[in-house]
Length: 143
Image (cartoon, rainbow, N blue to C red; front, side, top):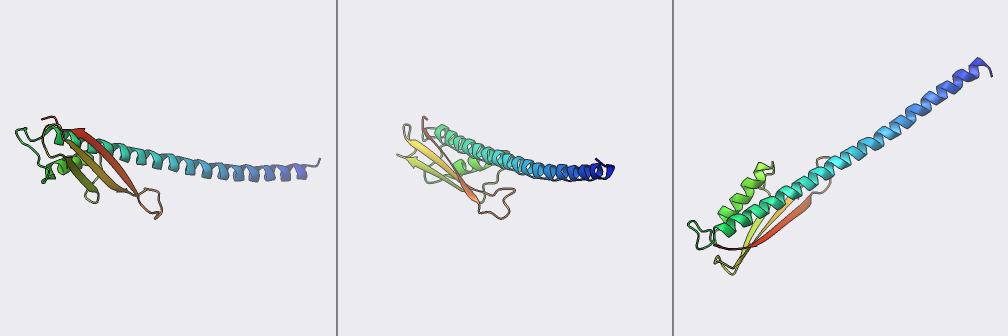
């Protein structure tokens, strides 16, 4: 083989390596962004679920026989508890729907349910539609 054909072969191999590197890097970037987005989605769901549990805990402890009861007609204390707990995990629930449902009133033995609906917007969504994450928790009033 002549030295010219060796130079051409090396040049082709360098171009092939650059193309393979570009394809692999694109795949790895898409994979990393997808993993990050899924992690943020799961974190948001867990934070909302814990906020709903905290709202139920507040309602269970502040039943009708408590020193400072929360009434079924006025659920602002439960909602503010859910919102402040979610704010501690960097989630603002001002645009979300927090509903509190007392089944059987506020007496011991009755149940209370807290549902949080949160519009999740993907960070890397590129104008995709938002998803609604729904977290639900229920408990029995003890006091």
